[in-house]
Length: 249
Length: 201
Image (tube, rainbow over all chains, first blue to last red; front, side):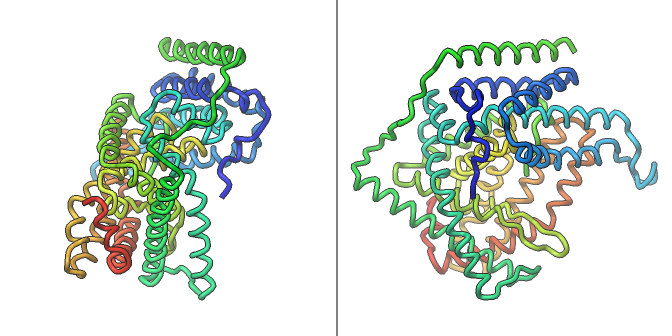
């Protein structure tokens, strides 16, 4: 399971301090998600697309992300242009509702703009960098520790799952719509849970053996540089511009 | 069960975030140093197991597993689900940052409800009743989540009535499969590791 497909590159966006990127990403998401202006949506989409191209993010990966979000918006394109009426009125109790098309278009625009923005700003950092950025912001340390262990052992447990699944297949297991299939998956899930629980206990004991006293030390200390100042300035200005477009609408 | 960004109004997003923060802090308060890795690793196990899709007639359904998660973890289901959703937002830009709060609540609150309603029977002495409670927890987890997602959509306006209906209908087979899988998983854990079912006691 390779997850950080976009995190390793050499563009400006890969080198920026994750704290600055996270701040801009958050402001951008808030402005875009709550806005109602097609101009702002279009401008955001254009800016982020240009950024993604400048950062030379692989097109395949971008398309995969856009496909995932547009699976949801496709549902809106099908549903929103129709209104449900009491039986007997219109075709199948549905009636055409033109403003719905505009609404679906608006949401599609905003959703795509936000996905591109988050891809550009967050997926270009490794997950651990983002954790550390959050830790520097003094977000609840316990929540970050849960996050840290979760991500650290996700890969381990995925391998474990894969091994158990392979073993089941080697014994001739074929998934069908049957109680046997569901029970098999339930037992695999239960087995994985028991293993994760036991592993957590061993991890904690190993930490105690190494003198753990409740402090998680931060090993990465980012160097805030001149370029991060510029990025924050320009990012902030562009988000403010989008906000002005929203308010003007 | 994600709602993409740009759909919900600001009021819903803020309310969802506030509810999620409340649930997460309740869930974290119960964690000491030893239980913290347990919650995190079990959350990872749930994440991995929910990547699988199962055949259900001609279609395939994704397991949600929030009922089983709730049975085991209680309020700690909130941080467990939050980290999983946050990771998806970070890595795949899936779900997004602004909807993180409302999505966490929509999935974790049903988990806690399953814990309250079905937990005592799932742990209890009668193994027939435990199967029923397991089915109930799995069914209820998905059903309540779908309902909450549909209600969240409706706060964006009546235009979404059709989409809300569709979400409920589309999750009916998931509820059944989820109920069956959760029932079998509860039976498994009762035999193999009953202490895990009483983790949040």
